[in-house]
Each structure stands twice: as C-alpha cells, then as structure tokens.
Length: 487
Image (cartoon, rainbow, N blue to C red; front, side, top):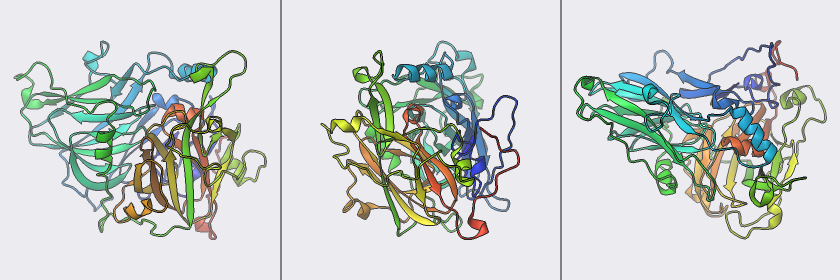
C-alpha cells in the first residue's frame, strides 16, 4: 500500500511497493505502515501497489498547513474531494491476468468515474451521480486525484473558471484555466468560485489519448455542480456541459502544462540543483516479443512489452530492499545503464528493428547519497509514442524543462527554468518528446521509478533507483520494523 507523494525519509520499509520495498501482506498477516510527513502540503493519495488492485483500492490524503501558518491563498469557504477513477464491469485482476496470458492489451474500461460514479451520460448511475452543492459567491477548494489506470484526463466545469494552486502536495503560482489535464498518479488543488447564475452545471472528464492507433475509452464521466439557491427554482432542467478539449488535444495539454510554476516564495521556498554531478538519460518505449506456441494478441501476432533504456524490468520473487539491506545475493543486479545502450533517432520513423525487442532483468540504478541529479526522460517512437506519466517513489523533483522531439544536450539546457520550476512526484513525458527533472539524492533507500499507465508498468516500464547511505547515522536507512513481512 503506497502513500503516493509522501517522501518517507529514510524509511523505504513503509513505501509499500510489492517486491521492491516489501513482500506482499498475505491473508491473515498484518503490517503497520509508519508514515512520515516532511515537506508535503496539500493533496496526495494512497493506493494498492500489487497488480491492478489500485483500480479499486485507493483514497485521498489531505495535508493541511502547519499550526500557525495559512494557505498561500485566501482560505476557501469549503473543500471538496474529487477522485477520478476508471471502472470495468469485470474483475480488474482477471482482466490484467487475461491480458498477460494472451499478450494483448487489457480490454478497455466501461467508464470513467467521479467519486465512484460514471454519471448521467451512462445508463447505470443517473441516480447516484456525484453532486457538489455550492452557494453563490463562495469559493471552494477542489482536491482532485487521478486514480485512473490507463489514460490522462481533461477535467472541466461548465461556465466556471478553475484556478490551479497546487500539484502533488506542493503549491504552485496560481493561474486561471478553463480545464486541467491530469495524468494517472497526479493530484491537483483547484479553486472554484461559484459566480454564475444559480443553476445546474456539469463537471466532466474525458480521455486525452495521444498514442496513435491505441484503443482507449472515449466516454465522458460527469458530476453535477448545483447551486443551493436553485433547488426549487430551476432555470434549466438539464445541466450545462463544459466544452472539453478533444481526445487528441495535444495543443490543449501543452497550453495547460506550460503554465505550471512553483510558488517559490519566502514561506514556500524551493531548492533547485543549479549544478549537477550525475546526469542520466532514459528512453521510454513500448516493445514487442515473439510468442511461443500459438500467436499472441499483440501487433503482428506478438505480445506487448515495455522498457526503460531497452531494459524490461522483471520483478523478483523476493524483496529488493531486504536483499540490499541484508546483503542477500542473486536478487538484483546493480548495472542498469545510465544512458541508452544504442543511440538512435528516438522520435523518428523507420527505427532499427532490434529496438522492438528489449532485454530483461532486475537491474537497478545506483546513486551516491546527496548526488545532484539531472534525469532526461526521452519518449520514443518505438512501436508507438505516448504521453507517459512517470512517477518516482521516495522523492519529489523539479521539472526544469521539456519539449517535443529529441533532447538536444547542446541547446535545450539553455531553455531550462531554474527559478520556479514545478515541484512534482509524477510528470508526463510529452508525446514524442522529453522532460528534464532535477533532484538531490538525499533519501537513502530503494525506490521504484515507473510509468503510471498501468498496462505499461505491467509490461516492464520500470526500474529501481537505489540511493546509498550517507556517512552519518542521520543519513542512513532506518532499521527494519519488527513486524516486517517476509516473502
């Protein structure tokens, strides 16, 4: 059970990633997570981290300002939690298992949800559609989490402006927008002022799908914003629907993303590494494998795979953190490549055929304690490009740059924002583009780095970042708890 967006300083034992930080909690067993909050403030969340269980096992964590401090914006009149989800009529664990057997994509979801309900546009949940009651003139803080499994979403509320004030547990410079684009794993804090004619208005979310040729759920989920003064005096019997961007709205996604900036004031300062001593370059790809026996359900009768630097991650049958801490041999290798083993035109066409087939291994990336790290995450056109939401456990990072095409190490660093880059724990790599993040490796332990599109993580788009202990007792991993679960 992961606390997504919580750093867990020196305490990887409570991060909750299956076979990375802990062994699964079996029926009849119990384990107590020790949660440490440090710099987080705002909205984060928790979810299961075993197979596809997070589709239904998840919830929100709200971290308020410390006593004696206040929000860096006018205190809202009320707060509303909104969890965006994805729903299948069938058991999601069976869906994932069947896709793994056949080598194809998991079947598409039957609905997206707002606080557990698909909404009025579906035939099954009209009576249960989420309703948010507001008073005219009041301001509300919407705490939004995307627990969606496999798609980025656009979200909007008809005829109402949204003001973004936070992402992933960190404050941003406020900016007004008609919509947000939120990836799986991200959380956003948004202010809404009820300043329209008392009536009914839809809030709605639909997919942003940038992968050419890939199937996706093209439905729209809705909730209703209802003015309390209008309960018995409806101006309109049907709510207004917001004009959401199109499903392939890369320009709209880009327009939203480029506005993100850290608040970066005296009370909420940031520490962007201005110089780096460790430079990493990871390519992100969807791959194909040959099938043994009968044809598989992937393209060309093959099965899907995925990789970072053309290494498809293999989860071990025991726990990497325990193996590292107790020096158990044979569980993992410390040789994950720091740059692609083969250079190519990452976002071009007619790529070498050998790139379609990855290598395999439980290979981890080792960092020295307190290293100043720059990581370039480069999207590729291997098989198909996509907007990949990448999440690093145990850390937040600064998104200092991003762009389309291949990263140019001679030109692109000159465009970096080192003054007020957004601080995040999950970042979307633009379709056929790149993103540059920086962080200081000051949290010793074993931490998963993975795509938060669940099908890609299932196929192997993961690696592990192992940060060594520092020189003092205060910079070393805490001892394991007494109730540590064994494999």
